[in-house]
Image (cartoon, rainbow, N blue to C red; front, side, top):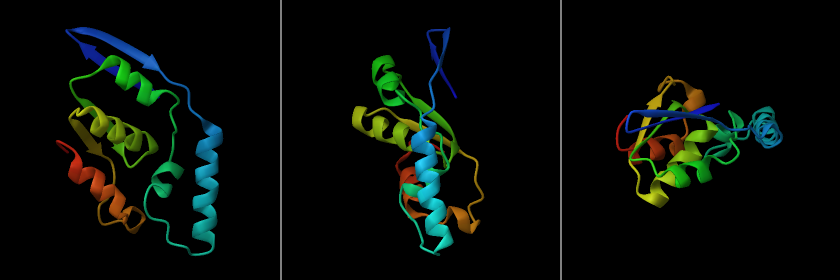
Length: 120
């Protein structure tokens, strides 16, 4: 997963490590919920979709961007970016890559994040 910053026409790309153990844990819990027909709302289905990026919150806080643009929605890095954007009062722009009428994306948490975004 690449994080891209453009600051005063200088481009910088940082590669963050993925925490596959944590991503796999969320995936397993979500899979168990589906197997037993337990409706999982909130962050779990998004986190299960991965990836969990190590240090994303620290990177954003350190670089202090004017805006955060994330894609695709709904994946786990969106949650981190949303939390950091709220905490640091940074405008969040999201490019979704989902079918809004697809039942797999019927999660009020997704719509809460989209409503709080500065632009979609």
